[in-house]
Length: 345
Image (tube, rainbow, N blue to C red):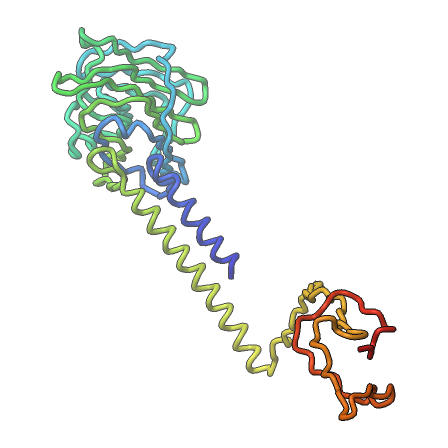
């Protein structure tokens, strides 16, 4: 399922990156009859390529890139609203016919069969001829305040016509137009742009016999609906991928349920416990101190009572030893007594 989410993210990103640069890269089939309008110099960040699919249709590819363009090698002298015929030396196929020459117009287009001086880029003027328009607008290559020029390079199997730094006829618009139209002997057509004026221009191909299809790729300010189309395509692709992943997970669980399968038992993870040393505080043993022992007669004891017999005679030694000792009531003495004096009067 994670793989499906990654695929959805890749599809969404891939569809949006070209749209940020310019148009989203698309390929559509037209019957040599398509057009659209550009507004402003931002539109120069695009390359348009028409690939011939058969005698009557072509596919158009749009990518975001601004090209480096040099003046054509062979100069074409054009005044305002004029054209000049150029022989190819080879045949160019277009909408079921083959042409051995082209008409280069001053107003940013090439026509076949006959020349055109139309300067207003209305649709009625556009379809009045078999026209290949890279930048159909009112241009003036001979304008004195501008150093514009028109020229071409013929390679024997292709021809590239260049409009180089051509100014608009009206002084109300700023900038110059530098772009090229390349025709190849297999019927392919490519428009490249380096700069455009601030005026609105028209690009496209017309077969002259039917109303052209609007490619709907550009809007005012050079923004493009290709960005919106790319995001929509990416989101749809992401939704399909996510839905497929959810369905696969559901189907897998359903099959397991019907087959009576169970998930493998979970094995508890044994975490090793490191032994720890516990220190227990024990009090230090104290040395034993015996109570004091008193030997002999206490020097602080009161003298024993004197026994005076009635006949005033001294008591015998045996009798004196039987007399009780007086009770001790004085402080303990630290002096040692003489054991031999115990019991002496």
